[in-house]
Length: 393
Image 1 (cartoon, rainbow, N blue to C red):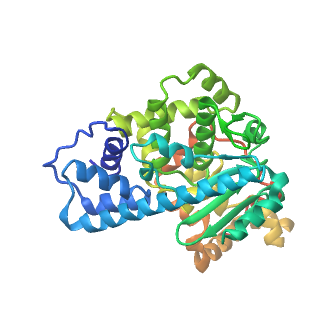
Image 2: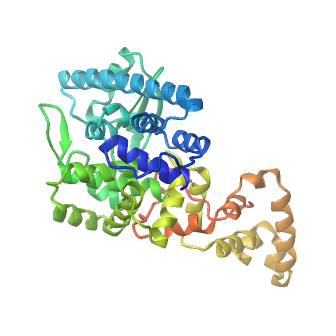
Image 3: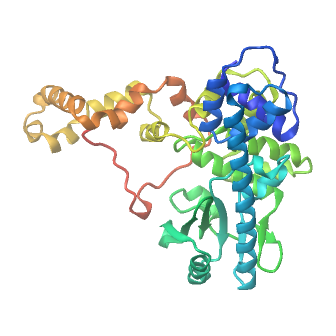
């Protein structure tokens, strides 16, 4: 059994007590397991499972325990800072809502097992200046401002704190998601005077949309799927009809069905279909936050690998005429300049980092895994993020 599947079974055991059905006497490639756990930011979870199952390899015990203790310290710091900031926002009358991992972690057997690189908070943009003042006073540095009018702000304070304040949950670059989530507090309910929260149903829908956004743009790790799996197990009273209607509204009902099926394979040991195997392989190769290689595949649209490479290496005559004017004067010269361009592209030192080089190295199953239903239409021109359809490499 490959490292990713072993990690998934161990994860299910650690976060919800599911029998991993692993032979304790079977040989496990612990080097690969550790590498996978690191790449998906779940080493602390794997540590707990191995310890409880008496399967901890002595040569990795020290490193696993170091990562586990780091996770404990990170979560404790994030919890204290997040609660203090939330209280201050309330005292200043600033409406806000904790998102994603800050909420999900309380469904895990222990909050520290739901590791977070950053803390996500939705806020009322009318109080942006006050927010900047609060964070500066608390010793944070503004690392980045993004989104429409730069209302999404990332603040950092070493060693563990990275707080992402979202002025908009889903920006207009994904119109379908923006139509549902763009009005920020529209689907929320009160959670105190100046705090808000999603209903269980809308929280799930937001998780599904966030997962899909990352899945189709670079990939997503096993931790995101574990959230979906655990949430459904911990919320048996969830109004599934309402959830399905909301998912259908943003065209994610089929995508979510596929992910739920994949979760059955990963965390419950069910036999996979061919499609589920492709999706799992894609996720395993994505790491926690996706990869540049998978992000590059976004340029392929719905093309197959061969079709994409042919289109990129042998562009149409209109494109070639721009770069090679003689083609515009005599189209019969097109094949000759294709050859010239091909050699120029392959000999450029930048070639090894190009989308052509990346796609050539990708396994076809990783490309096929992105062709499942649910890929949102993206406005690449929004916020001046213009898409380059063609380039020299």
